Amino acid sequence: MEKTVNHYIDDLRDSRVWRSVFRGGTGSSPLRRSLAIQQNVFLHLFSTKVRRRMLSFSATWYLGTLTLGTFFILVATGILLMLYYHPSVPQAYADTKDLQFVVSSGMFLRSLHRWSAHAMVFLVFAHMFKVFYRGAYRPPREFNWVIGVILLLITLLLSYTGYLLPWDQLAYWAITVGSNIASAVPVLGDRIHFMLLGGNMVNANALLRFYVLHCMILPLVAIFFIAIHFWRIRKDGGLYAHATEPATVRAAQAKEGR
Amino acid sequence: MAETDKHDAELVPGTKLDRREFFVKLGLGSLAIAGAGTAAFGYQFLSPNVLYEPSPIINAGKPESYPVDSVTLDVNSGIYLIHSNEGYFALGAVCTHLGCLTAWKQELGIIACPCHGSKFKRDGEKVEGPAPRPLPWFKTWLSDDGDLMVDRATTIRPMEFLRV
Image (tube, rainbow over all chains, first blue to last red):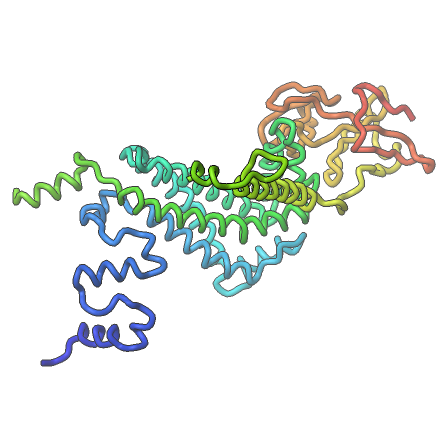
């Protein structure tokens, strides 16, 4: 019998090297497919089984997945931007200009980073509205809603800290105003303001602190909570499906052959 | 489990705790002390001891360079030097709302903030919010060389003019 592409893929998956990396084995039996998810360090966060209708667009509008997608774009473009950016005064502004007008594809990467950041904030809100109006925040998923609120705050803080980095007039005054809002905290306000900026005014220390927060601390915290967020979907019984949802109703009708 | 343990366990001398309770308390206490130390260390580390910020004291040059009835904004130091009929005074140009730099509107005779629309009179008095306070008056004096000096770190009561 002539070998098809699938046979070659099966041969590859049966090879010793492949089996040393992926232990799931060959074939497409339900067991093998479960093992492919369960034995993968990244995928094991998710359920091995999902209701088919929950994968339809109408069930979730893929808003959570799209948010993760923008996060990946932001990490990739952000790391590349870091290669040309010095978080120092006044070099930061010149580097931003260089990225726009001198570095090959710099304009593309910077714009992609900026637009993805806007899209991520929009998608996070859309995701939360969708979850809210579906009622998917209710028990047993209430803790995952709390994690989601934390992720919303991290997203906004990432936007805020990233806003200072171009070191232009817009950035300077936005952070001046924003950090002065922190001063309004009772009793501790001025100390929080001082520690946030590393001084009394938006200056070189503030730029460096926001840079470290933006490129290191906040992304790591975000990844930590994203992992918990995904793992909790499985632990809380999978994606939420309501019996009256169109997707659910259509699936039921299809089953009855109407 | 604690019940059966307690029957057999000897109490640590001088306490009412058995060995396990004693070590749990000792461990938690050590962690609490270490946590407090970490918080103190963190606060101290994150607060810079030396700042490379501009001095609060400004040399504004010769008083004669400011004509009578004029308002001069120094963008870099964030102050207005105002020569009124009553004398000289220095007014903070940083809005008391959220720290934006205000601007003198000659045609309207007011100081206005571009960020959120606060308005002040020329003597710093608030005309319109959201600013919570009037603009501060800073201490002014003449140096030995006859230069006009301003200390941005020291506020004085309004209407204390410097007469030259």
